[in-house]
Length: 450
Image (cartoon, rainbow, N blue to C red; front, side, top):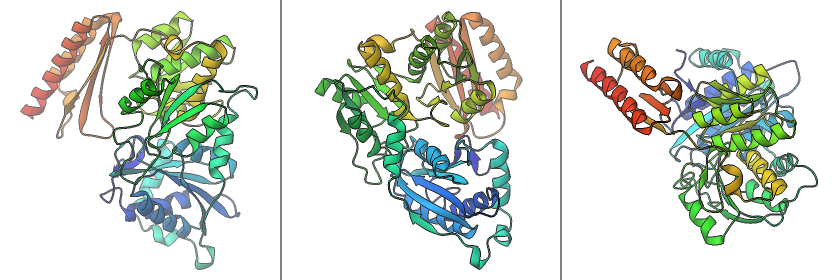
C-alpha cells in the first residue's frame, strides 16, 4: 500500500518498531539495490549514518539487503546527510543511503535514499521501491556468485571537508572570527569543527561527544538555548547550530538572538543578487515561510516561489525552474550551485562569507526583514477527513476573507503525525490569533462529533 513505508522524507519511525525494523531495512536494501542496477559493472552503494544507537542495527540490516541484491557497499560511518549526497557523485555510486531521523530524538531512526545524481528520490521511484517490499523480492536477488561486498571507506571526512571549504573563494579566510558550533552530538561532530578551524576561525565546539543516546538532546538547531548561552560566555562573533544529520542550520548572532532559515535565505539571496549570482529571479521556499520574506524579496523585484512542506519539493521546484537558492524556515537551506540537498555547514559558510566581505556583525547583517506575526497550532485527529466537512470549509473561507491581502492562511495535514496544522500570519497579531483559534475550535468540534 502506497505510503505505508515512505513519508515526506524517506522512511522514519521509532527504532525496532514498524517500519523501522531490521527486517524492513533489509528489504529496503534489497528493493533499492535491485531498482538502481544499471549496465554490467560492479554496482556500488555509499551508506552513511548519524550517531544514534539504532544506527548499528539498521546499517547491518541494509548491508545484508544491498549485498543480497548484488551491490557493493561502501560504509562511510557517521557523516552528514549532504556528505552522502556529495559522495554518491564523487565515488560514482549507483545509490546513496543515509540512516538518520534528522532532528528527531535518539529513539527514532530513518532511511533516506539518494539516486546516482545525488538527489533524493522522486515520489514515483519511492512508490516503485515500496511496491516491491511486500512481494517475493527474494526471487529477483543475485545468484551466489553475484553477491555484493561491504567495506569501510577511509578519508570520506576529508573529502567532505575539502568540498565544503571549496564553496568559499580560495582567498577567503575566517581568521579573526570566534565561532561556536553546536554539532547536536550528531553526524557533524568531527567535520564541522575541523572545516571551520582549517578555514582560519577560532572554534569553540559544543555537543561533540555522541554516545548513541544524546543526539539532538537539548542541543542543536531545534534546541539552541545552550548555544546562545555559550556565545555569550565566550563572547563569540557567531553561533552555528546544526541538527543531528547536519542538513539544517540555525544561526545565533553575537547578542544571542536566533536567526532562522527565512532570514538566512534573505541574507544569501540579497548577497548573491548583488553579485549577479542569484539564478531564476527569486528564491524557493515552502508555504510555511514568513510573509516578511516574500515582501523583502519583492522589494528587490525578486519572487518567492512556494512549495508544499519538505525540502525535497523545494529542490524539485528549484531544478524545474532554474533557481539556485531555496530552503525552509526550519533551517534546511539548499544552495544548488554546491549541493543537491540541504547542507547546514555550507549554508553557514555562506553567512560567514557575508560577514567577512562586509565586515559587519551578524546582528546587523542578518535582520533583513521584520517577521510578520505568525501563529501555528496543531489539532490531533483520530481519523476521518475533517478538512472536508462543511463547517470547517466555511470557517476557513471566512478566515481567508478576514485576513485579506494583509495575511496568509495555511492549513494542512501533517505528513508524519495524525495532526492538522493550522497556521496564519498577518499584520494584525490579534486577528491572527483569533482566526487560528476559531479554525482549531471548529476542527476540534467536528472531530468530537465524528
